[in-house]
Amino acid sequence: MEIKTTSERMYALLVLFDMHTSFYSKAISGISSRDAHNRLNTKANHVSWLAGSLVEQRYELANMLGVSGKQAAHELFENHQGIIENVTYPSLEEFKKDWDHVSPLLRTALINVTDEKLNEQIDMGPVKMTSYEMIAFIIYREANCIGQIALWRRLLGYEAIKYD
Image (cartoon, rainbow, N blue to C red; front, side, top):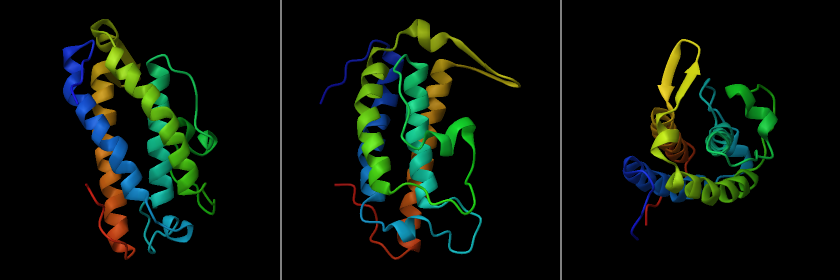
């Protein structure tokens, strides 16, 4: 499928975005709620937190690009908070519903984002970057988190993620 973006800079990022959109569903597929909260006696982020964090990130990016909305579990992830001890996070199916809702809206926003918007400066205190750099970082982070979920699949005894 050919992808036509308003800004030529977005083409490669959109290819990755599309991959991550399908990899997310494959990564969380079949993981039980119990296993999704299992940290295997480590301090590592569990699958539920990783899955919800990815959904929150997509909504934040969509908001940055003018698409309003937030995930059902927003309060568990707002302000980039880490795992909250002794909290049962929503089911992976609930996260997937929010993922499936925001992804096509965000995809359209990414296709239509202008160079002017991509060049806007974002001031995050000591860190300053352009909107384009922020989008690139977020898409990099998606790959990282999906990879962590894929590793958890194996550590918890599930089949490897299927990329077909």
